Length: 419
Image (cartoon, rainbow, N blue to C red):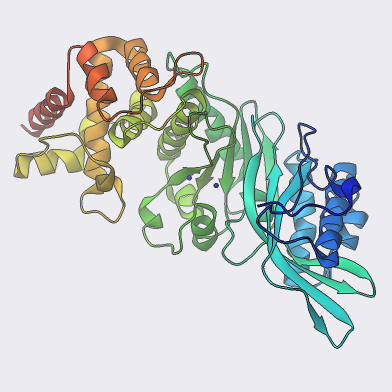
């Protein structure tokens, strides 16, 4: 599921880089040369847009757009309403970097193109700034600079970039649905149920934060949001968790992106399973300090998602049962590459990992399972994880088991269901 030009005008420092915590920094990149007059003017333009958002002044925001009637301008104008609907009133732009010198057109106008880091938080949900890279284009006409576009073709869009965004804030989940692709109230109700399914697990109840669920309008928009260049494979991916995470720190501003196709075709129980799976990832990333091996993180997400499900275990593990009947698989726990949706039999990687975690939970209890997970991933109030390749093996050994024993237990369970 991501350096500073010294600002000539000291007064501009801390205004453009105005964030939620009141901290300030230069908007320019230190690797760049001294900022040009155009650089400083674009920084001031971004300052005005930030102030317009904070004041809720749509006319001031509109005044900073080159042409609100163009598709690019219309998207910026619509983003204002979306940001306010999400509860965002503060944003900051830092690390402005000009990609090319401003160009003039017959002395009438200048054009500026570059990049910036945009930071914002959704109040009550994000614990840290969500920072995203943006490609900016601005134009100067008659002495005034305005934004042509603030999202490049290859920039991953944020929820507020999506068209016709409708937002519903539940008790624990903020749901943002684009273009009425699914019923907002139904989606919100399912999200709250899924959140409660995750919160019912000892050791996750204190770790799961408020969550943001985004439903884009198309498969193409979904691919862009989760950083994929094509829609290939999205038909088998219900939802994805995306967000940055600093080394040794918990994630604090994740987004769960639910594809519109999955949102429409899933049954009520299927939607619960998919959302509970992703919300488990959010909870894990918010309560640990490093990523877990994929068999453990995906296995736990499947375990939580299916824990209160009415689906029969044999049905859930159908593909894995057939694979075990036809070979000596599994002889080991699934590796990261096996979870790739392009890999043959990737579904059996999820199913076998679910059964491995299920066996662990049966053997050491759910509290013991979560203790092991926080030992491997590092808890927020404990020491940092070692990060060594043998950390999982050592943690399992302390519980009287190992990866080989778990793989054997998984195969035994599959074969017993195959009879």
